[in-house]
Length: 415
Image (cartoon, rainbow, N blue to C red; front, side, top):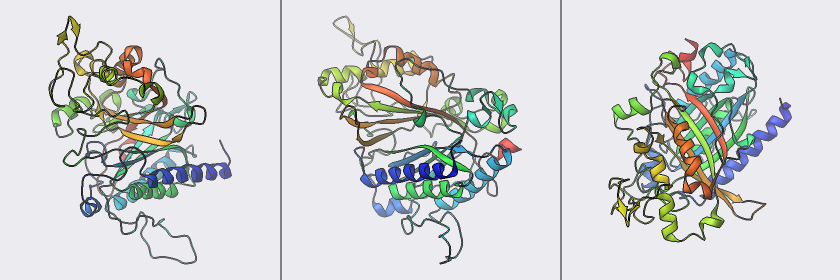
């Protein structure tokens, strides 16, 4: 465990870099949200409900994601942190200050204040729990090992990944998404400040996504390779699909997780040197889609069906190693994920001089070992896209169900 001074430096360094990234607009879409500033500022989502916000909510323009390590070794401290965070999150999502109270000029302000006057900006805040809260180094860390969900066990290694420990795992995760980058930063700043004496930031990431007019959600969003994301995503409005693929059902997973879900995070670095020298035809064969329209090869528009049996000249029209083929539900036993990914761009790699940019892959699901793991194994083995990407960060979190007024996220764990 680091000393308190080192933890403070870590917090300052991570939050400073996150704030700088949020202010840049980055390469992934900037602040162009496809909505008017007034409409975006006034938009508000409820914190309380059956499910946490930021899961089925339409993705906003900006994301701050941070993994946090708990300094304490007691379940009561975890309960207190989750309670304090939930109270603050409910206020923040209404566009209020995280902590109520009049100013005291002889003390630090109770709220950092950087989002004063900016409105809710469609802010959502989501909390998740990592496996290390339940069992760490083989020990029952907080006396909660009995409640550890089976689905929260660590992800297996995958071929071709190069994971960094300072971009992976964590005891807790905070996802703050908003249509204003400063509102997202303020939420993260306020929440980590509230727990500063009980927890330290392990890693943080800033992402953004473009929202062309009339294209909120998956369609229209392009990744930094220029291809559209989320075309065949689970529809959050489809209750049956969400029950089948996203919401946890309790039982052997623990009744405290009923109505919750599991978040898989992967930090995927894009390797632009080889990609930029690949022909347009080659790039489209890597994805299995047209770059301009997003249509599957052989189709005309983005929403055309993906025909995996179509051939041309005796060869599959969609190559056997195309990303869309290997990730398709049809080739994965019907498995699907609710993807909510963002692009990142964080300067230049010192060793290569290439842009340090890529995808913050996030996917919610009922059981990551039954859904994400089999899909990722197929992709790692033969996906043509893997030649142009490198997975450098990874984490898995259990996101409890939503809270009711007067309660807090994670309360079901202590019931």
